[in-house]
Image 1: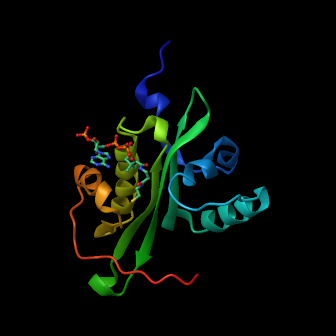
Image 2: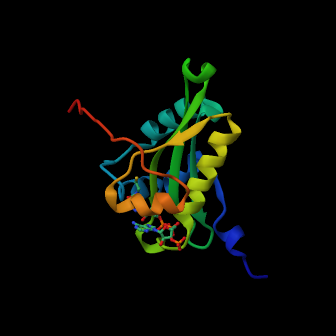
Length: 153
Ligand SMILES: CC(C)(COP(=O)(O)OP(=O)(O)OC[C@H]1O[C@@H](n2cnc3c(N)ncnc32)[C@H](O)[C@@H]1OP(=O)(O)O)[C@@H](O)C(=O)NCCC(=O)NCCS
């Protein structure tokens, strides 16, 4: 029986075993992510898991190669503003360079956005480079304001 695209590229939550499936190597395509030991991965995984639905990392696994080929995360900020409203923050979205342009990035964004909506957020926000503006517009986002940053190292 042939594997449908949906079965082949379904989105699911990160699992502990994903470290062995190239999850860290995928993140390295996005930014600095030096070697993470198994212990460091396990500790951070447990820490994030304890936050439950307030911090979700999702992945797409290629069921043929058994590699993680796309990921993204969303965490839920709880505010006093907006009648104790909630905001979803999308972070760390990356698709493996060999599988870009196949709507996987959009799938990841849709999963994270749906999660924020389900959690009762009144909006979902993210930062991106000018180069990726059109991608996010195609995912239903629009540009608003500017980003400020101050690094500590
Ligand atoms: C940005 C990124 C996540 C997009 O993932 P992708 O799987 O290649 O994107 P998709 O195939 O889902 O693209 C969805 C739509 O956006 C368009 N698109 C994707 N990237 C684009 C870009 N950089 N510029 C313009 N359009 C883009 C696609 O052509 C597609 O259009 P269509 O629906 O009309 O066919 C991927 O290129 C990537 O991982 N880049 C490196 C890491 C990065 O920059 N991450 C974002 C951090 S903010």
